[in-house]
Amino acid sequence: MPLTRRDLIKRAGAAGLVAGWPGLSLAQSGGGILRMPPLVDATTSRAFDLLARTGETNFLGQSATSTWGFNDQTFLGPTLRLAHNSLTKASVRNSVSEPFSLHWHGLEIPGQADGGPHQPIATSTTWAVDLNIDQPPATVWYHSHTHLRTADHVQKGLAGVIQLTDGRDDERGLPSDYGTDDLTLVIQDRRFDRSGRAVYDPGMHDRMMGFTGDVILVNGQFGAQAVVPKGIVRLRLLNGSNARIYNLASRAGRTLHMVSTDTGFLDRPISIDSLQLAPGERAEVLLDFSDGTSDMLVSSSIANGGMMGGGMMGGGMMGGGMMGGSGGSFDILPISVDPSRRARIDRIPEGIGGTMPDLDIRGASR
Ligand SMILES: [Cu+2]
Image (cartoon, rainbow, N blue to C red; front, side, top):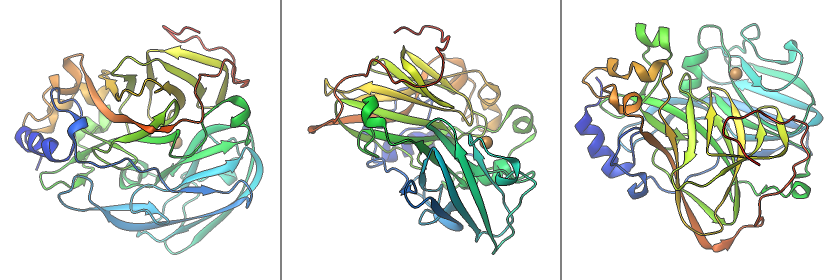
């Protein structure tokens, strides 16, 4: 049974914001402080273990959803930090109830080292694979890529971020203190039933247009707030949604200084007002919080399939104007500044020295 508009307003008052509900503010939310996924640094050990497991996650503070996660997490997995030119040994253990395969999305590796649909890991078995990594530093990710079950598995939580690093971010003048001035943000939309359980129940329309949800989770958390130091902050953004395209911007009008694309660093930062991010896509941007004022990461509505059809959800809850029609924006993540914490980096670097050529981005300036 779908949520009603009234349910959502009540809930938003208690726990946070529902995407696309103008007038409701995440800033008053009770969603707590945003947590990063646990960091697994394998740059020295050159080996990591992932254990896929079942669990329960209470996203909205109402009732628990059966979810899957890796290692200590009931939903999503740790951030893996790997050397960008290394032979890293991966071990993936399946302790969930059905086979899955794990795709290293963005790693330039041979097919036999990748977990496509051809390479399922049976329940109670372990897949050991050597990742021969040799590519520029970048934010990439991993997710289930199981035959006919990919969308369902990613909805359940089988996904996480990989940071490919060469250890030279200090020289580049980039924030690199994980979870402090260097935030990893997995942005996902989800659908919830009346009891507050996440549901993945694609209908005919979803199958044609892509399954979208009306509630935004960041790192699997609803209504949480990021707290950052006073200075330059790096956001590593992953669109981990199944179908929704975001057009991210700062509500306070802060410039986004884009420093990295999917495949690595730019030569120099590019100044943009908004950043479009398609499902599976990553980007890294710097924001300047040295004036100490808070902000809200927002997304304007983009008319990709699911949004246009939001009204199909029943009960009129997602009536077309909600996310698609008004041309308005919906909240992704409130960001507040802790003035007692000075950021390590206090200016936007002029050059990054990346290998990505100049991009032709509409509205970009240097
Ligand atoms: Cu992928």
